[in-house]
Length: 492
Ligand SMILES: NC(=O)C1=CN([C@@H]2O[C@H](COP(=O)(O)OP(=O)(O)OC[C@H]3O[C@@H](n4cnc5c(N)ncnc54)[C@H](OP(=O)(O)O)[C@@H]3O)[C@@H](O)[C@H]2O)[C@@H](O)CC1
Ligand SMILES: Nc1ncnc2c1ncn2[C@@H]1O[C@H](COP(=O)(O)OP(=O)(O)O)[C@@H](O)[C@H]1O
Ligand SMILES: [K+]
Image 1 (tube, protein in one colour):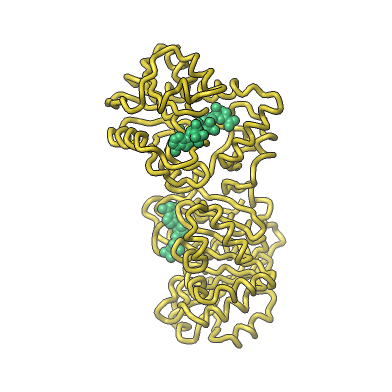
Image 2: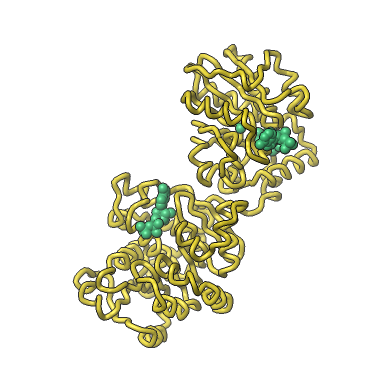
């Protein structure tokens, strides 16, 4: 992959525009197809040199064209190749794809006649970026037959049936062991379920200049340190704890204090210079008995908070983990909208019936506010957006950020971070072992530490999600929220 395209995500529509721009700049489009098909053949031979038969499935568009190029290249290497086509290729294909078909000098059998055998390796060149609707029954049946047989599938560009924009399945999809895509990742490679169906992803540079790809791209990104490392504060010898930021985490009542302490511990481990747990009187003793480096302060009601907020050294706040759902959470959060705030868990749920009040306040308060909903919390705060099946998870997060005027971390295995200004990144470094109690509290604490250190909201959130994922990988498969905290890697 071209190094400057490492974190770029390109939608199918943008890829079509790139294709056009490349052709207009004088680049031979058939040469691009040849490079794509040859890269597929090379990958197939490298990954499965012992296959008894390479079964190449060709569709009615340019994805099929890549398949015919790959089939010809495999046959030239002496491999046993069988080609099966969807529809009548002579009638359906045109342009480069038809030229590629004419250069294939073997038989072309109808797709429906395919009987997969153990020892086959399938090259899926049915549909790629041009998939525009649900798959027809005939294709669904073939996909189900091949998936059931368990023979390896190498997908060209995308596993057929996966929507490249949303990652959703259009009736059925191949479960590929590998996917070979071109120039840049597509959202469907990262968003679930597309990510699970793509297998190992290889991004091949087929020679479209990076400037053309970047010019047509819409700004969606993979979450990598390149997005935020220049905003990360670095330690120098003259620093002191106040300069490293003071983070406040609000505790729930006596029965629900653990979540806040996890957030606080994570905030300290992630680099906040000072962390204070703000606790109601009822939970002071239990918090005091469990805290060491983290400080404690009694905050019972609105007045207590208002008074304490006169201290401008309080850099950032985490409100939600174990806090309890209700008006007290809303009152506190509304007071904090002009500061740096991570609104998580109960803090989000509390606004289910009062969301316009929150969004109106955020529109004018000009603080740095990050909300971290999982799927259920997202649906409570943004029900219309959650229900809209036309939108990808990326577009849902963007729409939520736009209407709430906050940075949204839409959590899950494919967490999306969206800024109120339209910036967006999809995270891909999180292991499934992060699905454990308290893991979200740790994330809130890390993001809070970044805000306390002065990072802008989007960068604080994206860096937090990435470090949380990296901590999960370091902590290993048996991780608990506690070991996650001690595994947070250095920032930058
Ligand atoms: N620079 C680049 O971008 C390069 C791109 N390259 C390759 O081109 C691929 C994109 O090609 P593409 O645009 O022709 O789309 P593709 O995926 O072949 O499908 C379109 C065809 O499928 C049809 N069709 C759609 N949905 C359907 C359904 N549910 N059921 C049935 N039919 C359906 C659709 O029919 P229509 O909607 O027009 O009726 C049309 O005939 C890309 O993935 C990559 O592999 C490489 O060559 C290197 C350079
Ligand atoms: N399958 C998964 N793969 C990777 N990360 C996951 C997975 N499931 C959950 N996570 C991450 O773990 C965290 C769980 O947060 P949350 O749902 O709030 O849990 P809790 O309330 O138990 O802390 C989120 O950051 C989420 O993105
Ligand atoms: K495909």
